[in-house]
Length: 408
Image (cartoon, rainbow, N blue to C red):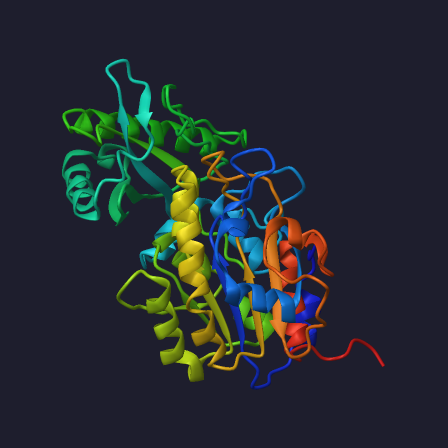
């Protein structure tokens, strides 16, 4: 795994070659039945199979073997930041994703509107994926009816997308290592925020957040679906070294969901605004900005959403939709293309998982291996083997001739 980014910063050099990192969120899967096929293996993917046949494949591990990753750390890993070393709260990523300018006194959290039953147990962690318009109304309701002003703090609730929102608490003395309120499963009660840092500011911050959550849940109690909420990833902006400085590449992010815009912006990428949410819309945007950048991060969300919903067939169809735009991508003549996921989200498990992620590298200087199709079991026989996801960008920059020789 990559732990020292300075060596790449010292060796990075510029040229005209362009790199595309195409991430199908939650790409990896497992069979629904014994001896069955995964979603990727089931999908009709002649174009991805061509890339695998002409390139080199393997399987990447986002965090460490056996560890199930969250989306934030998994994407940091894709950008070559070891997520164990660079631990970023999801609230920071969500805030960056909606263009919120986090200040030095800000504590941010990702919020999920949720549904609880009469006994206070979570029955739907996403409140039925309410429409974004409803999220906007609920954030306005929270903004108008909750406050920490008596404690000397400003509270800001901003809508993100569907059931997601950002909470920012602004004031002095915030910090610590704060836990989530989301129990991550239905049928259980929400958790209280606790501090694991053992510091005075951590204990103070946990108490402050719990006070706001209590107010917020009381305000939402009369809602038909989103009658509760949960918070995840309470954190402050850590100030990461910038991707663009390390690799000397003008870098662009083409993503639909705010969280992924946020992680890209956090590492210094330009986030490209566009209309539409389908893979062909993203490739159209790619073509439009092609001349302006050297590195492109394209994020496909729905492969993960369908996996979490347990919708095997829909995940298959989304993979096929991506396959159908690959020839448009290749027409732009990239030097290197990487296709991977940030983690696996098997529809059978309806959640993120620890399974290694099928990953392929394609380009003129990529040595082809013997693999002829893109899939989980085929990737087991690829030349790249099993490797840490932090190695993806370094391999790509090497293939693209963007790293100088080390030593005499």
